[in-house]
Image 1 (cartoon, rainbow, N blue to C red):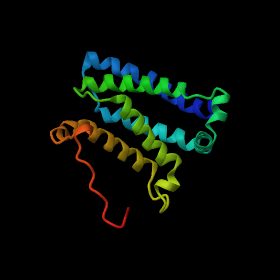
Image 2: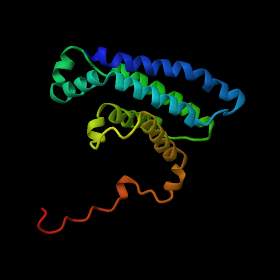
Image 3: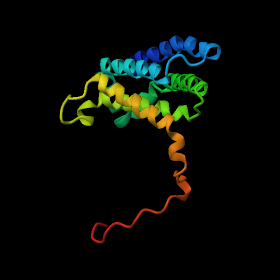
Image 4: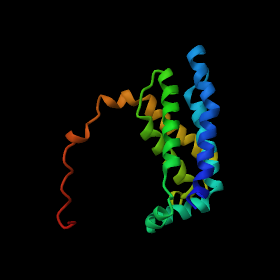
Length: 178
């Protein structure tokens, strides 16, 4: 069951890495020809399409993992294929961004961005309860904008960044709410 759900996603991610590896390799010789958002738009758009096409299976897998993970584990349905592909996409994307002079934690960024696309494509009724006013292209464009704005402008925020260990304690709730 897990294979039926993850196989199209693993295949898509694997194909993407293979297709764009050649592009990344040419960057060493020619320098960046296209903005990094170019590949991201194609990646997130295609990923959205895969998630939409496999929506029912993905929902079933999410429910099974939430309510009966021991059933999946008993049948050897782990997440290793996805983890391997996430790592490959992270490594590949990190190499491309380094050529643009950008260094970030791609492992976390890839997983969070894939989660945003997953939520918009599969959990759309919950994410957009008012109805399907948001098109696929709008979702993809905004995910790309959000991810790249955060990556490109990370230095802007670092001056005011507070580390997790030095954050002020949250204020106490008003009396009567405890």
